Length: 232
Image (cartoon, rainbow, N blue to C red; front, side, top):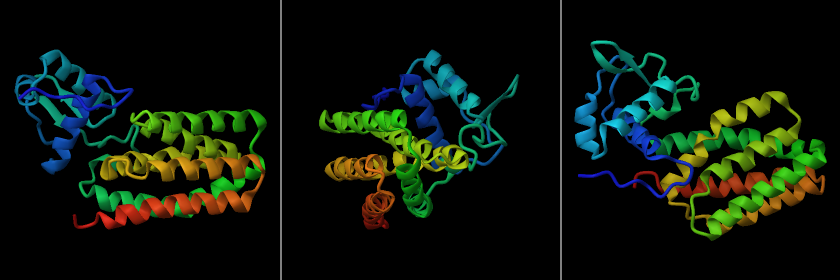
């Protein structure tokens, strides 16, 4: 069976195949040191060329999810993707539970980050935040994947906060945005547009309490939908 690439922007075929290989590792509960199928077997199973498999494996090696041992094969890395996923979240199997836990952490942090952003954002940061909000809206309205733009929007809020630690920490937990979009098939499109507008408007107006409440509402609605999917 040939591999049909997903309709995701900013992903090459090799990147999509890398995600499929990663999903197989998770679904099969492969442990550290487990050997994965060879290049020929993967190409036949997924339905792509061996060159694409090589590129996909290189991606996973660069992310420290896989490691290549010359003459032996390709294995699940001991570092488990710590390069761009320092908590190893991509290898946790229960994605619904993971999304809920990540949203719980975000509820602890992001309302306060939004309040700080309203107090501390510089004019050029506000301009960039507005651009990212508009980009998310445009992608949603065109029916295109808005995940990457959504992540950048939330990261910009962290940058606006002026807190150097939060600016570095927030990207670690924002994998929940990708998980949320995948799990819900982006059902809350209008809610995303409306709450992003409200969050941005409050930050621009220098309204910390309004920004705090708007972000809390945004995340709470998301969590409610994820919660409804438990057990499905």
